[in-house]
Length: 171
Image (cartoon, rainbow, N blue to C red; front, side):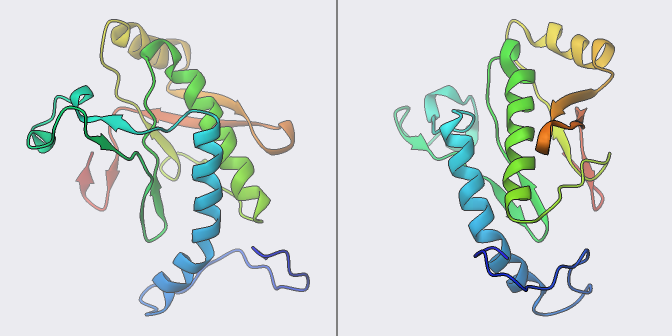
């Protein structure tokens, strides 16, 4: 259990589709895990606040350049998005560290992350002077995969993609 209570039943599936309590049960189960995950990622300096001046986005046009926006995970139902920002030359190392932290944090709570293609992927966007080099390395050297040390040192694979389609929406 999340609280370390013994004798709790273990299952390999969640609530049935359409169950009105499904979202609430998921939220209650995940809040502790996500708080721990955020702390681990912050301690590894993989997520941090971003100054608006760093973003060339019209969405932040009305904010002062010194305004800080908290970088945090986005969760909807059983989907989780983690915004990681790093220079292109350090992005693969940052992704490897983040994947390891995700795997070990969920494992600590008795959960297994499904790293299969289409289930858990890294949506990679690179900009700046090393972006082209990174894109080529991902496609040709890494074959759109990143090997990282999972729980107990076993090697796992995270798929790297430039776009992600979910329920008919492409990101």
